[in-house]
Image 1 (cartoon, rainbow, N blue to C red):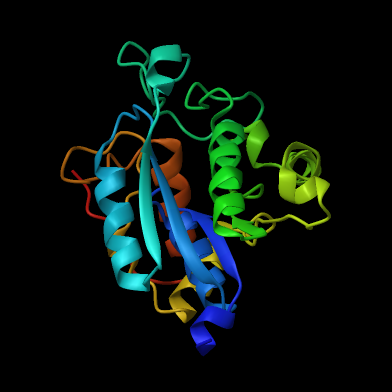
Image 2 (cartoon, rainbow, N blue to C red; image 1 turned 180 degrees about the vertical axis):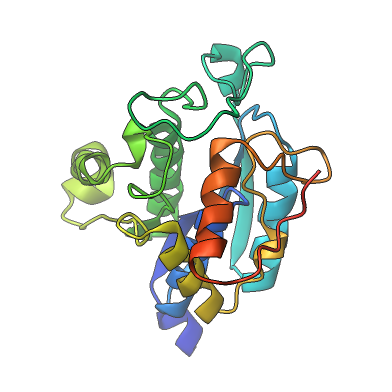
Amino acid sequence: MSQTDKKPRAVVLVSGGLDSATALAIAKSEGYRCFALSFDYGQRSASELNAAQRVTNAIGVEEHKTVHLGLGEIGGSALTEAGIDVPKDGVQLDTIPVTYVPARNTVFLSLALGWAEVLGAQDIFIGVNAVDYSGYPDCRPEFIAGFEKLAMLATKAGVEGSAWHIHAPLIELSKADIIRRGTQLGIDYAQTVSCYDADIEGRACGVCDSCRLRAEGFASCNLPDPTIYK
């Protein structure tokens, strides 16, 4: 058995954005054999998936799957319904914004859990953040802890005694801290797309919640913002 084969396996959710790229780099730095999982779920900006491919190519993974989902058929979000505008008037944390995609992280983690069980992996990484974020309920520590408990009850591996670990290494970091950590790990953030309303080329609008949080993060840690804007 080679040294690589001895390393633990992990499924890492990779959207193509700044946070998931950092989560992938962290998993890789911790010695995991990383299996990247992305989703074409009917999101407004398909450029995210192009960015996910760039990120996984640059960081290096064992395998990268893109699963096609029909969340756009359910609707209910500005990210999946053309008839709902992406808000661009500043981050509002007193309400859950219309960019929230109903049950998205629950669905994503469920599929990651299934693939991890097939792979014989016990670790899943997700780049959720509960500090500088848009107020989504499925980005909170309580959700991650709850899903980890669910994994133990819902899987053959869990019932047979394997311990599942849902890693959210960014969950208590500011956006500036995330950028600092990723920069230390050598991430080229110019390869990522965070904008909720990016065009097909990945150029950002500069005014949606995600763009504002990203720009503020780079400014706070005194690093140049590599984002390409429209």
